[in-house]
Image 1: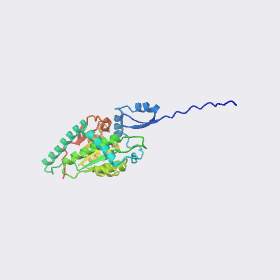
Image 2 (image 1 turned 90 degrees about the horizontal axis):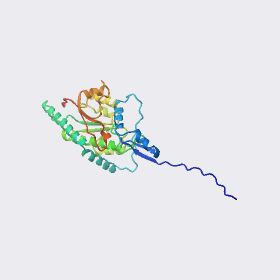
Image 3 (image 1 turned 45 degrees about the vertical axis):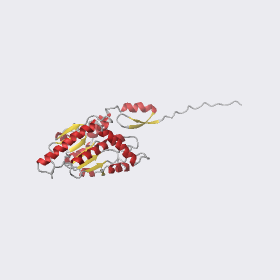
Image 4 (image 1 turned 30 degrees about the vertical axis):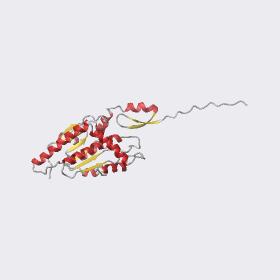
Length: 287
């Protein structure tokens, strides 16, 4: 009996799913044929600007998705996360960005002490707390695992820790440091606790902002800044705030302050893209 052959069905090619990290630190899951398209749609150097502008200038009434704790890799331990943080901190503190920033910050802190002494006030820096808003997760993936911005958060946390230590060495007050972000998971909170940073829940941060506060807000949204800046924290790290809302709260803060723009952070440009240190002019510590 002759062998009957049936036409074979063409085998369906399986495309390997690949994680692609673009030039701005966003990680996308894409098939092999889409990798180039993913990279083209987020060109290096422009995305950071657009995201910075949208973060500050977006419509505050726009409906936003509920943020949940970031998903950390299952096998990641606290000691491994601390080692990652230490590596990022060493890179940050050896950079020109930190060298320049620490010099400007030191000058502002010392000038504030001199002003306090001249007005018969306690010779201390007028910073009794640092409040961090919008840091992101140093350990986990965002948006159901589609976005990986851990390196950005680790570098920004390194900057926060470096600033915290510098301010604590300058001031005689008992410096408190708070961090608020709904995406913090248990590992993040443990890492922050080890750095003597207290995690607080929304909206506690708003009650901690005073004229003696430094606001560390690299990832804060405009609607949050509009609530925070009327308290006139004398130091602010983040932005850029310029041209965000002509005649509004943000522009009012800019008009009453001076600022210093960080040099490009070579290790990861968009981690501190166009960010500035702002300080209110002629601030004197109050009793």
